[in-house]
Image (cartoon, rainbow, N blue to C red; front, side):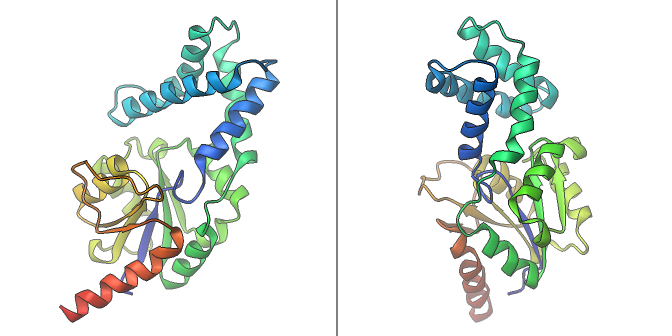
Length: 237
């Protein structure tokens, strides 16, 4: 394999954020004394959160605003008189305790760390992401963590990928690959930056976007064979 730098998205690529998110939300609501219609609250929160993250990635809102606003909006919709700042703090504090690994995460990171360098590229909150990585048991295989918070720019902005590349021990576009679940952030960012990408697509979603992945896999266990197979094809061409 000629790849030497493997840049992994974190949430819903290596860590099952959807599972962690729900556990942390439920814990937060229980801590606040809310036990009724939690599923409905969570559905509303999720929709609000997704919209705010999209606005963050286009530079329309700040991350500090997002962290509190998602709870403020959810509570306002339901007439809940609880400080959204408190809910935000409880939620973020609980995330490192609700880490769930996606099947194959440890194996792929361990294997690729023996081949080259593994880095994390994430738009998540830096302090929380570092704690979640530590709790996940993946730290031994990860060389660095690049966050949009530290960079000042979010995926898919090219400046974020330049920032991540500068954190690597050595960097060449020809020997680097981005692995992530989001076409609009990970794969589009790779396209714009001019490096290969692998779309982690466990739900077999159709690609109706402008982003073009170099590879597509449904399981993390398929990543190493997919990268190896493409290299063989390139040598034979």
